[in-house]
Length: 480
Image (cartoon, rainbow, N blue to C red; front, top):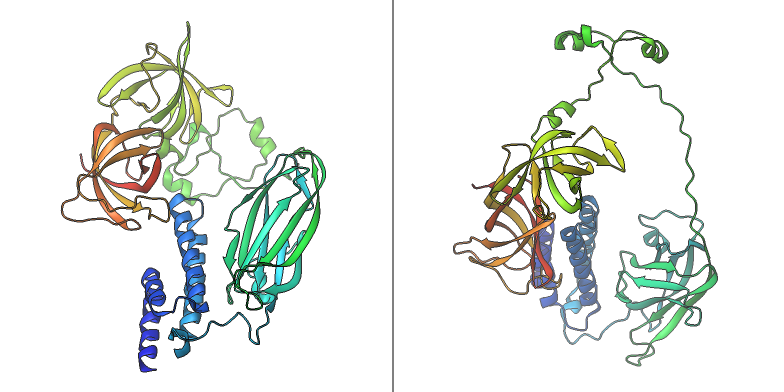
């Protein structure tokens, strides 16, 4: 008993320090193979791995990932506190989710909209929990949400099917079809449903118990089935919404009598109506804090696509990384270490000719002085003299584990792979001395590229090997 109490205190300390992988390893080593506690630990471990994978892929925000990991930690603490000596006994008979040999009663929540738009993906959800309070955690009820009771066991299978005769829906399972039911947290299944035809068609929701029933191993018992009629209609037309004008204060001054900075901060704006201001002849300057500083930065844009117009010149498209560009300004095309001066004669944004653009605008530039087929995807267009190319940098990198379809083996000094920066890929070599990085680690790498490219501090990239992503990170420091 003293050994169990000591193990509990050690595990609680590891959970409080955020060392969840060590906690899972200790619990899986201590719990017997057929223990129901072990199944709960495996389910929590899968939830942790799923959250970390979504964080590495960037498909889930940082706040949601932290919330999911906090839930796993709280569930782990509850499990550790409730551990008893029989749970660690390998000769202890395996218990069911309920006592007296009967399956426990629980609650199921399914949210499947009765009306869907044709050829538009609709997210459907099914939740199972022991009680309604746990079932409704972090969820908002609406007219499409239904709550019913059913029999549940430790392992359940949820399936959403369409009629094979109609073939009116395309259904994608987001989660695994079979999952372990957590006693303290709701277990959730999600589906992406796309109507392929217009009309009224059925969707069938089936729930089954996939563990032992009545002492017979491997039996699958269906405990819940619903037929839901779905009306698939045409896509809704988006109507313009009329907004009420906001009465917002703003500062305005004549260009001929622009006050000093101290006077601007101390004085109050004159009380004039917008109609009076529009009648004045002097031009007024409205300044946005930080905007002038952004425009004064050197212009930088990465080329995404190239078009050659016979008799006009070369058109390049891309997104402005920093600075601004004006029509008729001189720019440079940078290809590794080579540069060529050209003129941006015209700027097009959303099919409109513009005189000036700024950061984050995705536009097209008509370049004069660029020969045909001399500009390619991945090149950089920048202000004259701003050729910011580098080959060596320091980066923080997260290595995907084998379960996350990353590299199965460790990497060390001399590791060679493809580094993808926005729309250009280049071979890079990892410069590590004696350290070895394992899959799943967050490491600080020194990288050298075989050819110089335009790099900025904070720029994100991915590392690919054999057609799959094995790591992702960002540049923390430029070393040349």
